[in-house]
Image 1 (cartoon, each protein chain N blue to C red):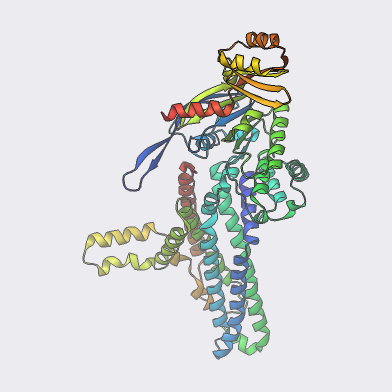
Image 2 (spheres, rainbow over the protein chains, first blue to last red):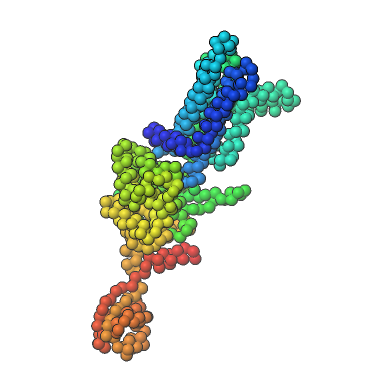
Length: 268
Length: 313
């Protein structure tokens, strides 16, 4: 357990010293800030636009960080051979994998927290620019804490993406890992279509396969409640909990698979 | 007790893209490295040295056979607390400074904050890394990285160190310093197992060596035993030798080579078949005086070349 924490802290330190991360986070914060200007172009829709853009920015830049750091987590250590010295120390291979994962999860948490703070700061500023009667007409207050639910689910989604990237990086190079992870994310975001495929397909076998894939592939669409929170529609706590548990179980399965693959690997 | 013991340790790799076929990187290596000695693991490129070291460190899994380190199976994580390892051409996280890297590894051994810093600092002193220790490793030269690599292998005060080509990338000063460090490690009871193809290093440092070629163990044993009986002849240094006496000895085929050292001082090489006392008596009868008499032994390099050539045949 101690080794796991030490590896995790080192992953965080590596991320903190990586300029790419700062560029991504700075760009996200900039985009959230610019949404304030965009909002002014659309009369009466300011708050909605900022909320839409802000949540989308958190999700998108979080995704970029998760994929592009995630695919290098293991691959870089193996390719550059820094793993030789590390694994000769008293550390088990599973501690290495879980430590790497925990480190990136911590990095993502800090990044999502920074982006969320920027997001709420812009909304709080906007709140002061509108008179009370106008604010009363909004479906939800500008700094609606309900949006944190959407951000929490985005965070779980990012943890799932990280687990996928980590899994692929235990046995393949960065380009293949990135392509496979992003591919799975795209398929998973339109997963509902797979379930309904059998209604439009002639072949029952193809429909059956599509339904099978629907259950096997990660359902990223489930984590997306951005539209609901922006329109102040209720998001049942049970739904959030079930989706989070689904994410955690999926992550656990992926991490187990990563450990099993990594355990068998030879570092030639 | 054995520091390292392997029994029929074998590793096959699959090679080829479409039709995968096994490549025997290491073939049934049985080796015993006694405790507290400096053991040289020698062989030409591609002999299987690095494969063996990686098997010992569990970086690769054996196809068959067994390996034990300090009496425990090589896969035992607990035993790694007592082992240090320097990989071949080491590479470390280039975003860390040398100090941070050593502290990171020391933390994995459970050293607390102050002790971590103390260990990192004293080891960096020992391997000759000065103020550069606060630079990120991306600014380090190959030789400096090698020094950091040696320091990280010693961070836990190991009972056994496994060095893969420890002299690689070092300048002559660095090589000498590392040689002295290896002897210091031996003096404090640490077993040093190192691979090398630099035979002079092995000859200067090792109690025992093993020679590997083509994935197979060619020979293993005490360096002194290996070379002691491999006498090639004698070297006799004499003064006051007359030309007539020299020609006489040459005529009898008792001298392989005579080199004038200066004045009337000669170094004479005698074949093994010539008893040195008889020729010495002969020469002194002609007025020569003995300077020195030394056996000419086979060097490790000669021995190595002969062993490896035999395997190739």
